[in-house]
Amino acid sequence: MKTVRGVKKYAKQFLKAVDIKDVPQAIEQFTAIASLMEKDRNFKNLLLSPMFSLDEKKKIIAFISGRLKISAGAAKFLEYLSETMVISALGGILKAIIALYLEMQKRVKAVVTSPVQISKGYEEQLMKSLKQITGRDVDFEVVLDPSLLGGVRIQVGSTMYDSSIKGQLGLLRDKLIKG
Image (cartoon, rainbow, N blue to C red; front, side, top):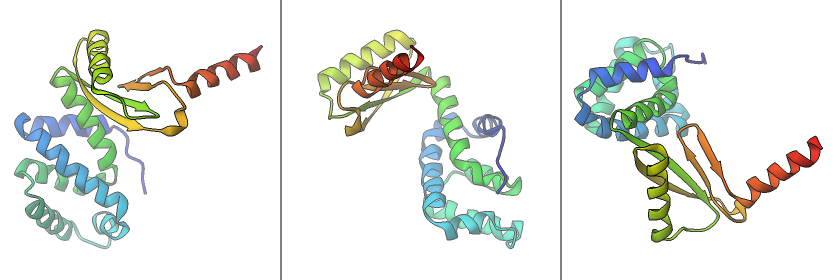
């Protein structure tokens, strides 16, 4: 399988081709398709295999689009990805679409990893702090990871804030190794 470069280019093409109000629904639908491609090898092969002609792949995409009630613009984009043989990178393209869409909406996504469920009060405090740091509204996602032992790790875009015990022990280990 070839690696696809320039997923951001495809994401920009999608955002130009689809009405902005249809983007959240298309993201949801693309997520379902990407997840199915990841979980079901037969489905993935159906979309990627050179054994199927472009017309057959278009029929498959039309069928899926009908079942998932995908907008015409989003379905056409899937056909385009199939035509250019980059549909295998749908997951990466989807991540780029989400990032660009949030940027357009003056929003940012924060993934908070914690060893235990965090309280609503703490969540609101974090959200307020992150909004102050980033200058944007924050979409919040909490991920539980008991291996952190304590503290939290927050990822906002490509920036990582790590106050977890595991992260602090890793920093201490690196300092001891360097001397």
